[in-house]
Image (cartoon, rainbow, N blue to C red; front, side, top):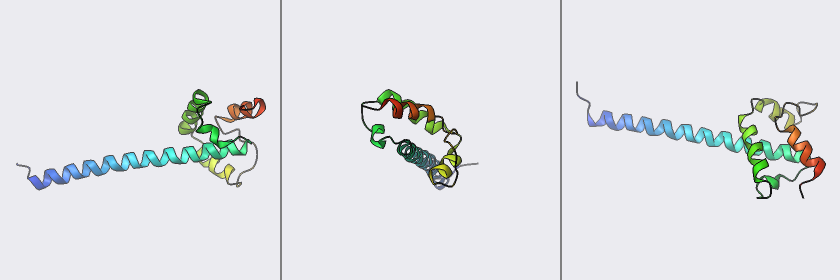
Length: 106
């Protein structure tokens, strides 16, 4: 059996398309995670711009990591939209946000 040039191009196109979809999906997840993190900062009375400032790089790096690895995305979305009441105890960053609010970010 021989593989034609067209079959090679089709296979290469499928691989490129699959890679594009994987990277696009990962970007989508990162953007949504960042949006939720900033909204959660606001809900704790913190300025969401601390996420972009260089003042707290180490803390925000850890916060971003926990947010991106969070398994409570649906609960977070509902809570931020006001569809779910109660505390934000589902959030892995809740304690960090409380400390930042308590001791300030200045």
